[in-house]
Image (cartoon, rainbow, N blue to C red; front, top):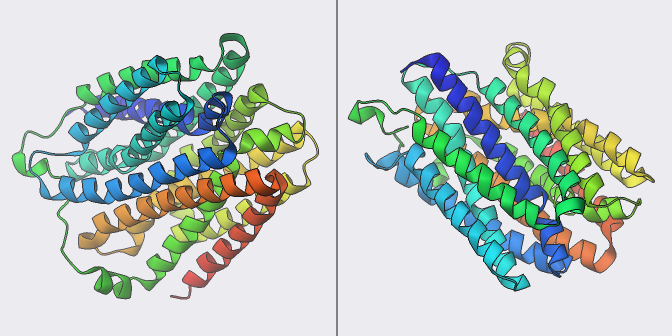
Amino acid sequence: MNKKQIQLQYNLLQGLFWMLFCITISFINSYLTGKGLSPDQIGIITATFGALAALSQTVLGRIADSSKTINWKNLIVTMIVLRILANFGILLVDDALISGLLFGLSLLLMNALIPFVNAANFYYEKNGINLNYGVARGIGSLLFAVTSYSIGQLIPVMGLEVIVIAGFIIGFLMLLITISMPLSKKEEDIIIHQQVNASSESFFKKYPKFVMLLVGFTLLMVFHNSTSTYMLQILENVGGGNKELGTAFAIAAIFELPIMFGFVYLRKKFSTHQMLIVAGFAFIGKALVYIISSSVGMIYVAQALQMLSFGLFASASVYCAEEEMDLNDKVKGQSLAAGSITIGSVFGNLSGGFIVNSFGSDANLLFGLGVVILATVIIILAKKK
């Protein structure tokens, strides 16, 4: 297997995944609001399918760990094909609820894909090819920014259907890249990891620090998703709309880039836990700027804090299990970390939808501030464990 070729393919895999993730996550609220669904209905849909995604991550992870024929590659191919079919369904139906359910299915598939897109990196590492994950993830953020800005500009011109059409095109390209990526010819190397069947109870007793970090991850994602999913309502409060929504997400993704590209260097200087603490304080700062914002420009300033908040968190959380756990527990740790992030997304979407619909986006931001403060305290306390 050629390292340069695989690095290029993995860069494209990450890039296309985050483009598709952008379309699915960032614009689900815009699309379904345009179809006539209320914020609480959107919250129920995203929370339900997010919960199913968390369950599917665990189930599919166990299957991939124990099977000699099912691996990260064919799981990604299967889920992308389903994502493309869901796109066709959205284009063909006019009913708002059915559109919401199909968009929810797309949300499920994108969340379920995250561990396996990351697993590809560790698969090649296991087979002696050390890829630069930070560069690949940085390209993902760059293309996320390009996609977000472009879709935001195109919606006023082409309508909301451009969201679905772009999703189909990008999904097809991601399918082609995934199919082209090589696997080891050794049958024993097809399995990414070998999982130890230790009980959950012994696992949690063995790693109390990691368990506390998982709680912190969940709470950070409650805030992140309750604001990201309902960013349209936040912007509307200060005079913005779909065009500004695309720009806001693009700014956030661009400011992630220095962290993503420089993460290999940062790991040499700081521990993962130290970076997670910094991310927690950056999330608090971001929440405060949202609360005091009185213009679209101030919302853009808050989005720039993505560098040290979600940008740092997204990179550090991937390596958390690698640093905190024994070799035989790393797989379970990766699955739990991904699951905690997804569960946080579920509660963020559900709570955000209810609060925005009942009390307005300002109340949602105050709730989010309390959540990130609690998350940061827990992450700090975990260091003592």
